[in-house]
Each structure stands twice: as structure tokens, then as C-alpha cells.
Length: 97
Ligand SMILES: [Zn+2]
Image 1: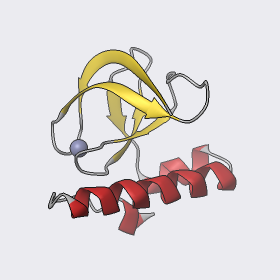
Image 2: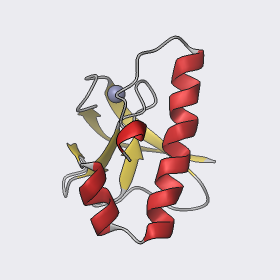
Image 3: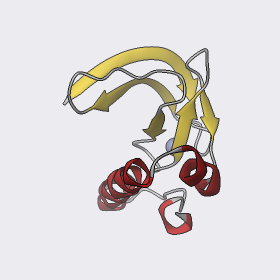
Image 4: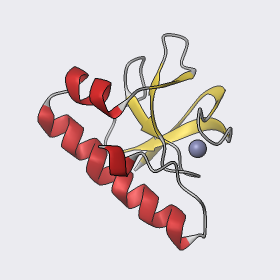
């Protein structure tokens, strides 16, 4: 797992200040990539300036191959379970996927 610092941005659901992302392998976050808020499991995408933007589950499914979509869903489920284990309220995004 690698962590990359990026532009400070707010989660579009819970307004948590996010300034880094953790990811598998040597990938680094880029515009258009998907990210999941560690505080509420909300799924977002990076804008061109690396701020975060909402992406609906429908748009996510349309813009990504099914395998990538399912990978995001699986990861979002894990983050949601982590959030619940900490007693945090989640965005309920996973249930809409
Ligand atoms: Zn959040």
C-alpha cells in the first residue's frame, strides 16, 4: 500500500479534509481516478485540479469497465465496514451501487 499526498480537498459528503490517498501498487492518483473517503466511505472522482467531485453510481458504471466498477464496489464495501467498526455514519453510497 502506497500513500500519496495531493491537493487538500473536502469530501463532498462529510466535508472531511482529505490531503492524501492510499492505493495498491505504484499507481498515483490522477484526474478521473476514483477515491473513497476513509471517514464516510463516499465514492468520488478527482477533478483536473485534483479536487474531489461527486460521481453517481450510474456515471461510475458508465465510465468504467465492469471489472473496475466491481473493484471500486468491493473496496468501498471494505471502507464502509471499517467506518462502521469505528462507529462512523457512512454516505450509503455502496447500497446505491
Ligand atoms: Zn466523507
